[in-house]
Length: 175
Image (cartoon, rainbow, N blue to C red; front, top):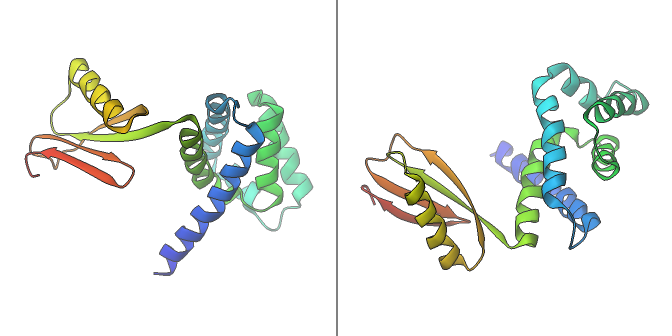
């Protein structure tokens, strides 16, 4: 139970940072570009256990950590805004929450842009026409722009299941 509490706390903290970044970007902010830059940094972060160790270690002085971070950001060509945001995470000892923050930022960005994410699980591969039909149906159903995420699910016997937020639409053989 303690890990669940920790996860909820981590997501609450991550959501605060994500909302703050969205506020900095403003209503007309380029959320897509910011997501892309943060994802590029997250890819480097994910590939290097040494980098993760250095940036989260309590024994390494913040100035050294910032120097390492600045070097990476310069190599990636990261914008001032994205760089400043990552530095804020660093100096507030929140780099370990990077993945949670990115997930929360995508959610906040989608909300502010009026985009709803639809996760579709399917048993057999969907044709492009079937995917297009599903996209149209969920656009009509939600009244919003939809971002579709398709994933094959071996457990389904047939049909599809879709999740929009906490609502599940079950068109599977089991359902």
